[in-house]
Length: 196
View 1 (tube, rainbow, N blue to C red):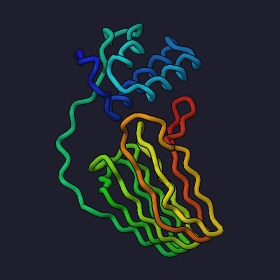
View 2 (view 1 turned 135 degrees about the vertical axis):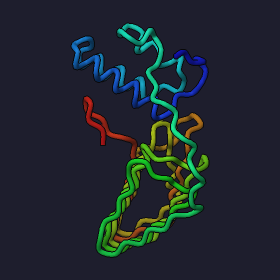
View 3 (view 1 turned 30 degrees about the horizontal axis):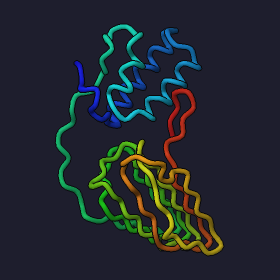
């Protein structure tokens, strides 16, 4: 199947491309350095034109992308998600719906929001934080960025590994307060074919 080279690549399509590169590496067609370099380019690419060349010298693709079947339309999700753990941990990961507003009010808890494979409603996600002795970790999808200017940390830390660097990806806005806690915002970590 051929694609308009100017059309943007989806996260599902990126995963399909990475799976093909991984298979080519296992077959001995690519060495580990080539795999790492091409994988990096897949995550940086925005359009089909930028990624098609990464598969052009591999068999059975004819320079076209191997794309999974289109998913059914996503139903309209909730307007807001509220998480209020006390002395426990909460994790959202895999295929889940991220509303435009998430409220986290934890006490002596940990919350992880893994948005890599999630369906995100809208182009901005607002995360309102009010936590004590708790941690919040947000894993952003490819192309997204985070703004954390509105977080007040008292005896805590705020680490943003995904600041705005240009482009028009999904914007995550984190605001509120954390006391004796931590906030970490990052993209997917990668080593060879492992992802976390």
